[in-house]
Image (cartoon, rainbow, N blue to C red; front, side, top):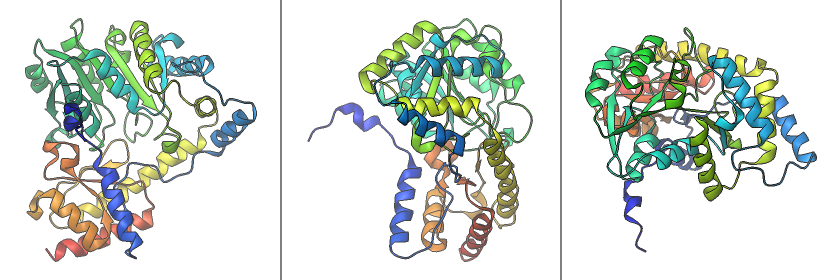
Length: 387
């Protein structure tokens, strides 16, 4: 079979590959502590599950509009308007099966071969994958530990060329847990406002924040027309398997993104959209409790990692990942991640899973119990001591 050439440019998510390897080891009887997958270990809140059941009984089992059910788009528009103090209409909202399609569709709709897209590195690997898939040039902006994994504004200024058509930002960030400050976002907006550059802001972790307030570039004066706001329900509401996300953008672009939905997925599952209304409008207690528990685990894992010789770890400000520096151990980070899985039964990801500038780091998800995190730290310490 001869594949289309573009398939050679398509990347993947290493987390799912490591998960498969870990599951294979478990099938052979090895106990594995999973710190590799970016998935909350909580159940979807009960009120959301009940809303989905009601929607099934009420026959929300048919096709809906490609852009999403009008009632759901209305609720999303209202919530985004309230959160960011901007005026958003339902016509600016496109609902998708998960948030990833918004990344894919936005790049497909706006980026041509030869265009340039600036994206964070280390960063979510699908950004670079889709940029290269469409034949564009992926231009990394390096997130450095010494800068608390914020974007360097002067470096960003140097990266922008006449071919730059999009900038991708993510805050709180995967894999580092870093957060873009309001000052950084204002500097970015000032730099690109009025230029033919769209911002894709990945806000999927915006409610999983431990310090300060979350700021969106979409709320800055004049930026909504240049911004595609991506969000979803997987992280905040532990709905990873439900596949529910959305994008908010200018209305003319929303019409084009909806056309891509028509050509690919037809529509997003109707009864799941009704559950999404309940997620946004219903009680937030369980979601808030989950963030509080993540905060408790954050302290445990950061302290545990910093107690291991050769590892130093910054305190993440958001999401549920740590990105420890393992350079002093002297091993390639991929080799170290493999070693920890095979030797210690602790599944983690190499920093290079998130781009070449993640070299020298590991990513660990603390979406696991305190007891398991403590045991993982003990196993890692013992394994690293034998290197």
